[in-house]
Image 1 (cartoon, rainbow, N blue to C red):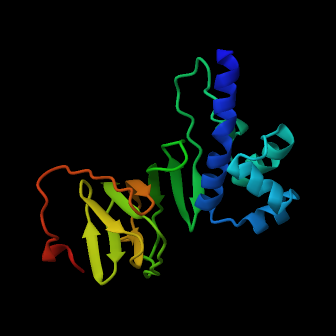
Image 2 (tube, rainbow, N blue to C red):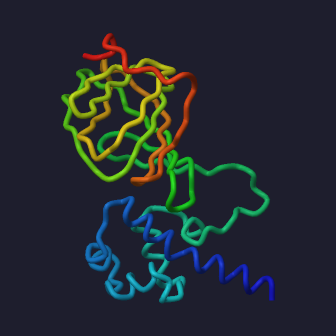
Image 3 (tube, helix red, strand yellow):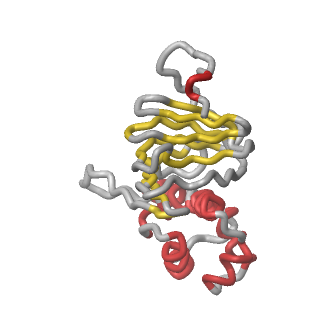
Length: 203
């Protein structure tokens, strides 16, 4: 009986996990239906928990989202303590997910590659709130009217509904840790007393 309840809990978590993956990728149900050949209504029922997940439905979704099938069902890798990280490349940058649970705050490592000439900012907006910490390199962070340069060891947090852009300040590679959550979900991380932004950091 206990095993059946655990199985139901695992299956019940598949829908929210699929919805979170789709929204994270910026894919609509209509786009997903066209790509997988699964009807939009079936995908909607699967995400809402009204349709029981099956291998036939999950395999094409795992391919589209480029994640292991185990990640869709949240199955633990029995006996293996290692964390299997799968880098994702977007917008010319590499993102390494550090968290697997859908919803809440997402953690990932971001790598901005070196370029012969730094890119010009192209600010974007989306729902959410972001906290970042520079591991190496010099990060150029544009948020609203602010244009800042962050060296290694500095952190920043900002509302992503403001126009923002991240890039290299000097053309060198940059590595940083990022925590991202939807509106209402903030990191609330402080490494010391809160200080106002220094004018010397503005470009």
